[in-house]
Length: 393
Image 1 (cartoon, rainbow, N blue to C red):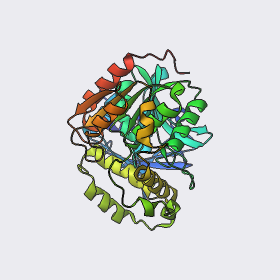
Image 2 (image 1 turned 45 degrees about the vertical axis):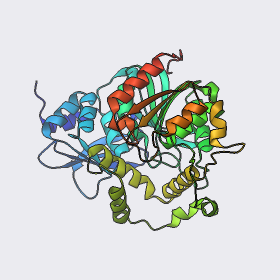
Image 3 (image 1 turned 135 degrees about the horizontal axis):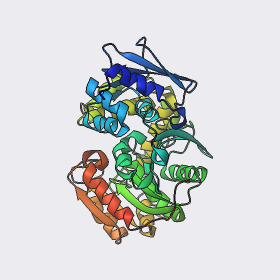
Image 4 (image 1 turned 45 degrees about the horizontal axis):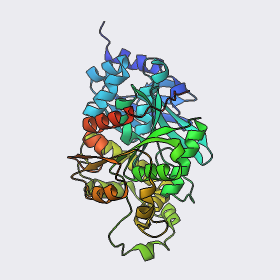
């Protein structure tokens, strides 16, 4: 039976399940384009979704052709595949867009994609949660959100309970103005999340700054970690840091009062990020701006960036002094074209942790987006050698 586009959208809205999508606000307006001759808005309020004629400004926008909307109404996997291929575009708020897709998918049992906020000792942490099996925690990089791991979540969810989180200060998680926002702070937040979820141990995947957080979990909380997959992890600088003496005295809370007009910030970001016209990158930029343009999100970004720059490489508590203490089985994935964390760092890691495995890919700083197939195949192989024997509740 052929499903026309207007009935496809009606079907999606009728199927909306608030239990799998924590909207995070009292009301949200999502604009749907391409599913009918005229754009329509899905308004989510008090856990109920309804259709209205498009009006005013929407919080998120979903754009696709008629054929894609018809397939989305049948199978969420078709929608996510269309999103990855650029046939379904999500603008302004990826959390809302993906959440709407998840909440309107056909019932899929324990492995169904959920978007929710979890109360922890360090504040509310927002997460994407899918699959059933040994738990895997996915930790994003500086300025990114849980959405940067959507391909990884899709790849691993058939075998693992896969949880992509927004670190405190980013995305839809709590943003305490005076949070430390260093590796130790983020690691404690991840342990608090595992405690709230009643998860004893989890494999960890981290990209960039998230990789540094994953390493900290392995160093400080090894009993909570299965294996580490570190994708272009942020590491303490080995070259000179001329601005370090000055940055130590700059209060990052000043970011909360800095004027930051969106057109100016967006123009700068799109100039400095390669491939900003591609669907994944454009959606990621929207997510960055959504957080950065809020006062507390901006302060958190500055604090985290400063802490990356200021981390001591040597000395009693220096990163490279501590790294040889890492006993957790680890896989380092390096991008040969990475200008942020050059693959040459692998030599220093090999000296510090000779038991670690290494994979070199022809990509830049975000392997899970740039080389998803090879990245995820390597991670699955690496995790398969160490079953935690823990099923999700």
